Length: 153
Image 1 (spheres, rainbow, N blue to C red):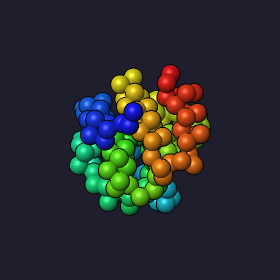
Image 2: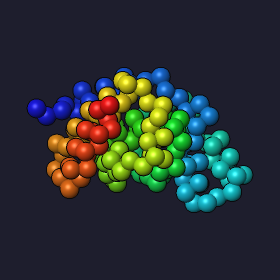
Image 3: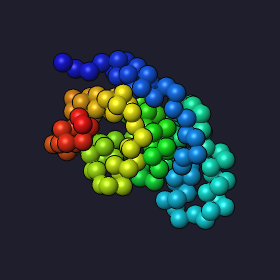
Image 4: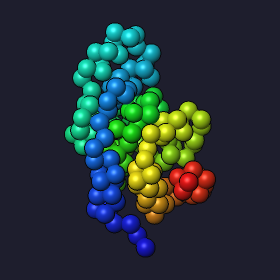
């Protein structure tokens, strides 16, 4: 049975509804880390980053700072994850989104360490949705393995 996009977006939105960035790494700050910028530059980016409403982050900004996914801390990942997933569901994210959920190192697992069971369930449902998408055919074995070995626990 195909997963309905509206249903999936509502499940993600509900699971992450009250999440804020707190003192986590924001979108442009993570990009600055990727670019090896100094601490002063990073702090300027941090001041500009959205901290309270992940839903206010545009798909254009997510596409601009797509590398940030690799540089978030656990708070940053928890805050930005729903925005990335929803952008992908709406076909507004240009880079594909299976990699951070399937290529699980100790570091990437630490990025997901703050997710609640409800949030992990939303990620699992998102991955099941990706399995239905033709442009994820190549990643299907990795997605299935990640669901079975990590996201179902």
